[in-house]
Image 1 (spheres, one colour):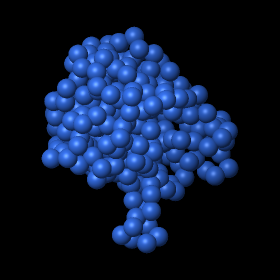
Image 2 (cartoon, one colour):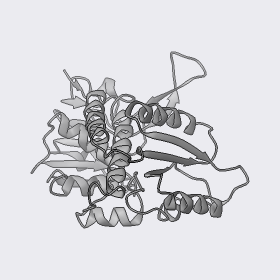
Image 3 (spheres, helix red, strand yellow):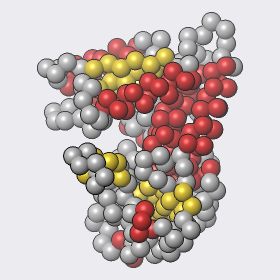
Image 4 (cartoon, helix red, strand yellow):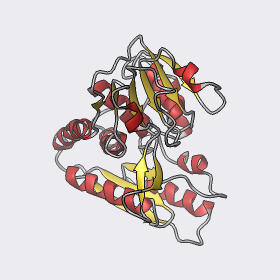
Length: 297
């Protein structure tokens, strides 16, 4: 029987550490503060904002969202981020993406100092990850690794695969898995749309991390029997049980893999809640560094 790797206990453990860090803060310190910057509150941002706000409130983190006006262009986004970067009461800034043209997401995020870039996707944070001196690591990559480590999936010295090479998820996850602690010391195979035969590429892997966003990509024809699957993919498809409605699915086909894969993260309920917890933890980490309680590595 395939074991279901729930994200909730992993998120709860991360939140407990965040609460302890906040409780240990010095008297008179400002509370940790996170700001989400986005273009309006239409789907999917409305859902993400509610989830972030709820998680922050539960931990004692101040949360607010900043929405650009419909007429605002790229320079307005850059100006907003520069202001937040200078604000000593703000410890973390999250830029919701993807952004439509002509916005340049990476140019915008690079306006933030490394500590406040809590999603870890700015050029300096990604560069520090490559140099094995991370300050902030991409939240989704941290979440995927946290789940694998919590459930003690075979990683160190094992051949693992990352399917997907996006600069905010797949590539940093591959680097994190291959790195020494807090990485996983794994032997990583990175696969993508031009890798050819997916089944051949995944043959012999013990754990697969998929972050493509293609429903049904992983089934019995591609996943080795007995492998563990951490499903980072997220797509919306029609819900057959609710006409006209959509439901969230991952890259893996849970019905096809039931009884075939050793374990599988659900979508939703797997990587998602852990990602939110990791964003809150990154905000607390920045708060500690910027308040002088700890130093950046």
